[in-house]
Amino acid sequence: MTIGVSKTGLPGANTFGIALFAAVLPARESTGAMLLLLMVGDVLALLIYRRHADVRALIRLIPSVAVGLVVGVACLAVLPDVWVKRLIAILLLGLVALTLWRRRGGAEATVQAGRGTAFGYGSLGGFTTMVANAGGPVMSMYFLASRFSMTTFLGTAAWFFAVINAVKLPFSIGLGLVTLDTIAMDLLLIVPVLLGAVIGRVIVTRVSQRVFDAIVVILTVVGAVYLLF
Image 1 (cartoon, one colour):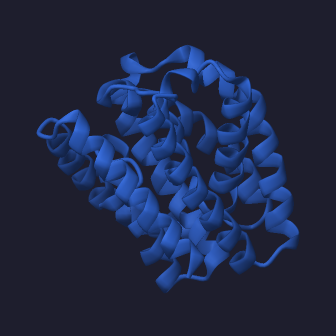
Image 2 (image 1 turned 135 degrees about the vertical axis):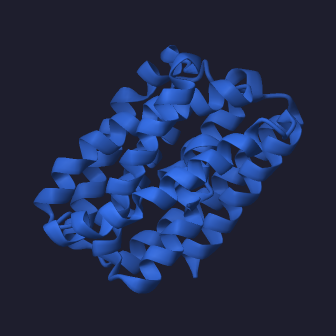
């Protein structure tokens, strides 16, 4: 359900899904199992928000995200999960602080134009989504700092993660993270994802931009603290 909610209404809400999957499955296997359900959520998000994406922002992120994905694959192959997750958490908290500082200082208008900022967020987003399916909080901070409206935020995120998760799939299969067992389990969990998508859609139509932004920040911090500890 949290996956569905995160795709259609509250980006970052799937952090709770990450926690639940990791609680009942080994960390590596939970990543593969969750990826397939995220892809189902991607389809739902595209059906609703596909026309609202900022295409220029997506194109700007391609090179950096590719770098992050490659580094993430390498880390999954050689590093223990716990150290990777702690590193992600520390970076996420730093990004939250940076984004809030930019907004308070009136610097948010320069975020989209800065190639260095796009590269930093994009590479970290690619890395975090590969190693822990935790790219949502990172990219939420980038889209939030870019001052996207709710629909543009959700549309850009929908296209971003639909493409990224499709690219991740063959790597996850090659690393043994996606198996026939995880596919069978995920078939039973599609209905809750659909229900969560409906709930998310209702939520986003009833909250203001200010509340939406605040929820994104709070969920990002919660996600970072979870990964840290």
